[in-house]
Image 1: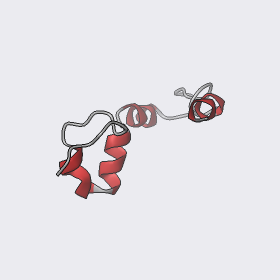
Image 2: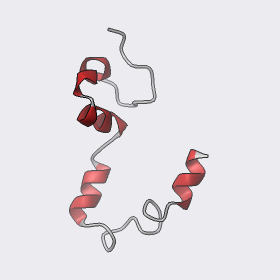
Image 3: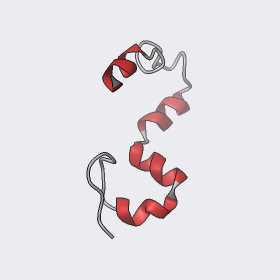
Length: 62
């Protein structure tokens, strides 16, 4: 279902362009990941997420 939701989200498909978003907005979206979102809202997870590039993969055990 997640892939279907992404494909049907016009802001992530047909409208994902500088005419809809600002250039800075596109750069910000492209420069972030689920790891950066998690760390922004929960900085206490930094030790567990150190070196993790995919937030959906197993994290470090502390």
